[in-house]
Amino acid sequence: MPTVLVVEDETAIATLVQFNLVQAGFQVQVADNGLKAYELVQSVRPDLMILDLMLPGIGGMELCQRLRKEGVRIPIIILTAREEEIDRILGLEMGADDYVTKPFSPRELIARVKAVLRRTGEEPQQDDHYTVGDISIDGVKYEVKARGQLIDLTPREFELLLFLARNLNRALSRDHLLDKVWGYEFAGDTRIVDVHISHLRDKLEVDPKTPVYIKTVRGVGYKLVGGDGA
Image 1 (cartoon, rainbow, N blue to C red):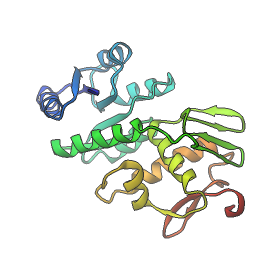
Image 2 (image 1 turned 180 degrees about the vertical axis):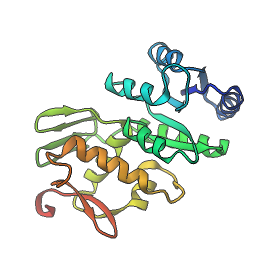
Image 3 (image 1 turned 135 degrees about the vertical axis):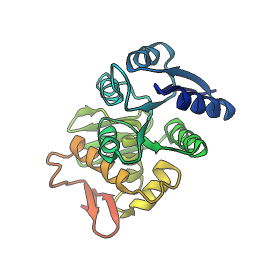
Image 4 (image 1 turned 120 degrees about the vertical axis):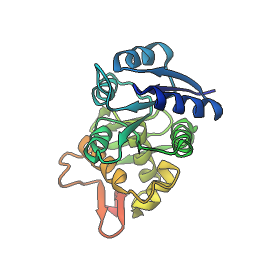
């Protein structure tokens, strides 16, 4: 039974989320501040964290960034107010895998939790190895190297790159990437794909402004190019 850590300082929201997660078959831990959440990540090692950004003490953004810098790969879904678009983008840039805006539907939140866990928990194919120029992707070890250096990717960034590699030289629309990588309809908000593509370019390309491998296909989406597709 997967364990979800809910980090929310508003008691009513935390109770609502906890109730619906338990009803859906999850074990739940709750923290009402960033420090407690950090300690629970170390001791409980949850399978996923639902993280409010507005927290006392250590804020959600700082917590997310700290965990990623320490190499903690737990999937993170952030909670933000609907009007706080900049916070959603910053949260993704700090390493979050998904976001849900307040007010939210409990059913939608549960669906996203299941989708993230489904994607990050899938068994890789035994021959899931790809080499694209000086980038190597190992779907079995869950590792990516660029120019011989191990690259730290979030679970969602890795899944996106792996899917692009499995479809090398194929132009993939943003909607298709949302469906296959995120595993559910994302209300047509394809900006989340653009943000993750930007992250991958920053981490993998020598010059992210003139990408060699992760190309934009105007009017369509993106493709990973190598060999004859370069």
